[in-house]
Image 1 (cartoon, helix red, strand yellow):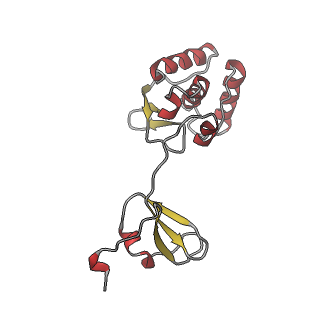
Image 2 (cartoon, one colour):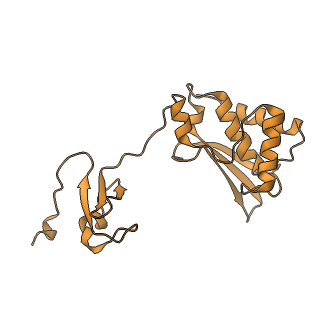
Length: 182
């Protein structure tokens, strides 16, 4: 497992060296194993005026490239610069500058899917059930049994307004609760 604190300090030094005015109000940088679709997240607290940064733990795995982890940290650090909490013109300008001067490939959007092509194992969500639309085939996956799975006829597809039915994704049969059987 890579040392996030060490990588973070290296990125801060590199950005300071090229006079990137990142905030000195970053109070927390931590790994987050619950991030599923993004590689990092920068949060700003209006109440305290501070930033916290979370980095997907898959970037810190031994088999992940250090370059990918540092690019993500740099991406999130740029969000702490004035006018950069979004991916607008100022963020893009600074990202391009960091890429050019530091040799990184800082992108506006990078995905977990790109890491999988490099052989990095990304923890995937496991779903047991799904609601399936009878008309368009759209699926709404669920991890646990819930009311919507119990009574799919009360709901409609959000895509085409079609009727829904419940399936088990693991191939087992659905056993309905005794109070539902008439």
